[in-house]
Length: 191
Image 1 (tube, helix red, strand yellow):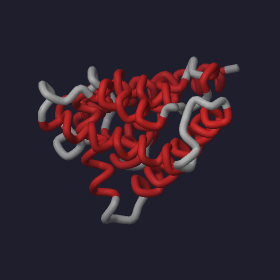
Image 2 (cartoon, rainbow, N blue to C red):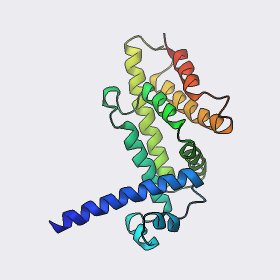
Image 3 (tube, helix red, strand yellow):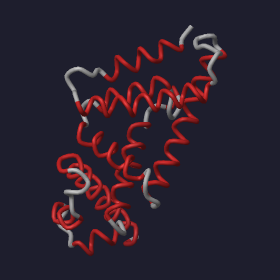
Image 4 (cartoon, rainbow, N blue to C red):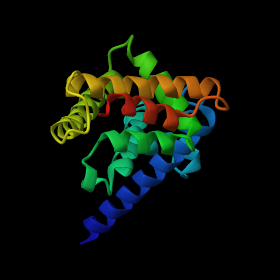
């Protein structure tokens, strides 16, 4: 019985670390956030924090995984990722400027390096595009979307547009309405 309590405390501390890391990454960015600083925020030594996460990169990836899990909870009625789910995610991102910027930077850096971040992002893109393409295929079968472009290609274009719009939005928030522009793109594929 004692192990269960220790296990639950360990999980609670892990969640606390992830919350603190997310906040610090958002406020200061990945490069300006230190493991030591996050450890201090959750009242652990650096070694104590590294007991839960082996390094800063793993901590960051767990923050992204957790964010993905939170964003898809309650989305069972429309699938894990869908066309509308992508638009909903973009709408949520408007309130998470720091995380959007961090994700853009990490994605770009991962394109030129091997490692955990690249593996995570490659797998995530494959998963998201596959899920969205299933939703597009359903919409095509129901006569809602054009058949002149394949479902996988439409899904890939939507994800690419979402990523590109995030960069444009980060550079000029006042003139880029990511949600409206995604609606415009999706409507271009509708019948």
